[in-house]
Length: 349
View 1 (cartoon, rainbow, N blue to C red):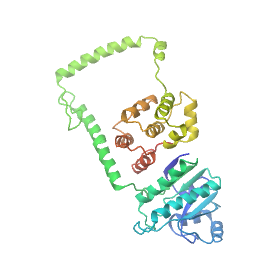
View 2 (cartoon, rainbow, N blue to C red):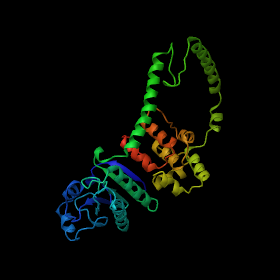
View 3 (spheres, rainbow, N blue to C red):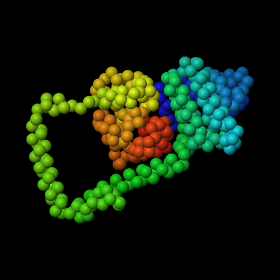
View 4 (tube, rainbow, N blue to C red):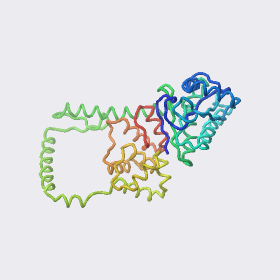
C-alpha cells in the first residue's frame, strides 16, 4: 500500500495506529504529544505511567482509548544539535521501530507526524527526507497504508533550492503560455508572438488567408472522413491504457509489484487495471505509472493519451511533472513532496 502525505489533525484520523512524537517520560507534553494525550483521555496517561519512559530512537505501544485509532505508538525523536551527534540515525530508528510495532500488531494503516521537526529543532526538509526514505524502504517490503501528517503548511518544507528551481520552471512555462494566449488573441491581424519572447513568428494577413484556405480544405477532408462507417473506425481502435501499461512493464523487465510500488499505487487498484482491459485510471494514477516506468516526456504523453489525458503548460501540476521528468528524477515520493508543497494533487493512491 502507498505513502500519502496529507494535511490534517492526526488525532482525528481513523486508522489502526497513530505515532506520537513523545518525550522520554511518555507522560505528555506540548505540540503533537499534548494534543494526542488530550484527545485520548486520562486512560492513555495511566497506561503510559506503567511503561517506565522510552529512550531516544525507541518506540512503545499503547491503546488508543478515546482516539479513533486502535493504538498509539510512542517514539522519542532526537534533538537537533547540528547533525554531528547521530541525529539522523536516531530519527531513522524512530521510524523503523514504530513501523515494526505496527507490523507486529497487524496494523493495516499507520499515521506519522514529522518527528523531531517541532521544538526539537530538526530541520524540516531533512526531517522530511528521513521520514520518506524510511517509510518507502519499509513499503517496498511490506503492504501497509502509511500517512505522513502535516497539521498545517508551516510544518512542511522541501529543500529551498528545489522549491526555487521548480518555481522558476513554473514561471518559465506557465507565464509564457498565458502571455502567448493573450498576445495571440490581441494581435490576430498583426504581429503575433507564438513562442514567447525568445522565439517569435509573425503572421501576416496574406499568410493568415492562406491558412484559412488550407483549413477549409481540411474541413472538406474531415467531412469525407466522417462518411466512413462506424464499424470501420472501431476496427482502428488503439490499445487501451491497461494494454499499454502491461506492455511497458514487460518491455522494462519489471515485475508487477515493482511497478505498482514504485508508482505508489495500491495493489488492489493495480489488480483492477490488469483484469479490466478498459479500465480508465485517474490522471494522477496514469502519471504515477509513467514515473515508475521512467518514461521520457514523449513516452509519458503517449501513455497519458491512452487514458484520455494530456500535459499542459496551463496547469501547474503538469508543469511540475514535466520538471521532474526532464531532470531525470523519477522518485515518486520526492515528486509528491514537491506537489504537496505547491498545493497540487499527489501521485498514486
